Length: 239
Image (cartoon, rainbow, N blue to C red; front, side, top):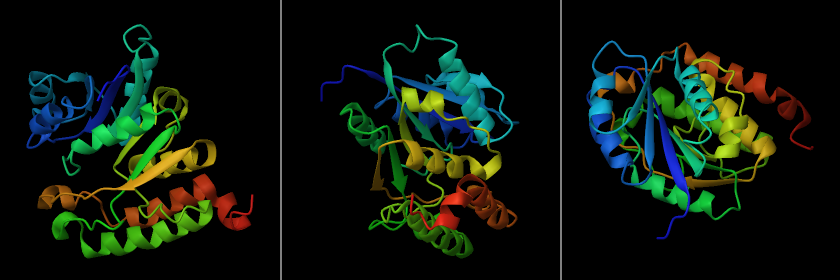
């Protein structure tokens, strides 16, 4: 595969020392730079830097971390002049980094602005990737999202891996908090961009990672969707 443009990965992290090393090393097989924005109390940052990541310390939550990376790219135009694609991935290493290659190839064709992935397509996640309640809640909310945007292939309400053109990456406001990051990305891209969606398999999580999503988020995430695209729901997506 001949690639004329560069790609970067943005990985927000918080206490991911168990998996950040392999995640960064594998990612660098498919992108030119990995930006880790870290807010950890363990040695995640040191490990990430030791295996080749550019590490920025800071970020109060995922959205803030992505915004810090966004500002870093914006403030260094020469450094990122030849970059066309930015891939955003969770730091828990549950998405196969080989998907980075496909995301990059799709965006570099020049036909789409965003590639979203779904963990609820024909490829089912590993059984221990989610608690049962998480599965039911995500699938139920995904039906609403698919209806609101007339995108039946959007079967994941909170995709944890997606790619953006540099232009789109720099345009998204990233004003949300907590687990609302994906709500904001879906709302912005499905409203304003050409989007392609493909299924991925979510790998097994350890118990600590699997329980990070607290029960309060079963209220917060739907509330954030209402905030971002409530008008679409009210109109039944007849824009």
